[in-house]
Image (cartoon, rainbow, N blue to C red):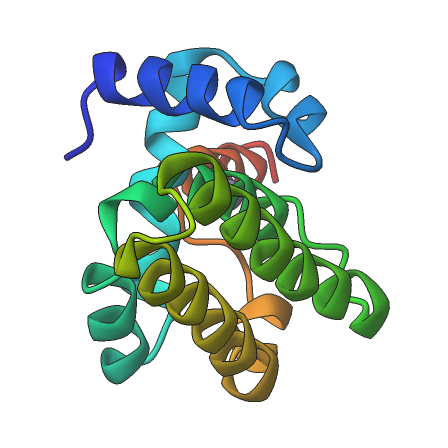
Length: 149
Ligand SMILES: [Zn+2]
């Protein structure tokens, strides 16, 4: 479970690195961001992709947060799907460049991981993008809609 403190830290990192689409984070409280961030990968992604996610370099977390919120808001279209995955790669590159100097090998390891993860999502994430979001906020909204008939 990601703590609120960690989410706040990721939020400020996303701002500091000037990542693309940080505006999407403004629509949610930190509490809700924590629920979304914890709720998306684990259930709707296939096992092996979850392993890829959990092995992502920690510095990619702010890019992953934006990516997760985009998946939470998925409009189930191919265009926004591809845009989200391409943006993860660009945001991951920005994180790598801001976090590590050009002579630090980690810059290229992190950048390469971001590129590979974006490509995996593009190749194998379509079903998850099109299926109902399984974060606690979406689960609750569905339960309420069902209760209201
Ligand atoms: Zn959701």
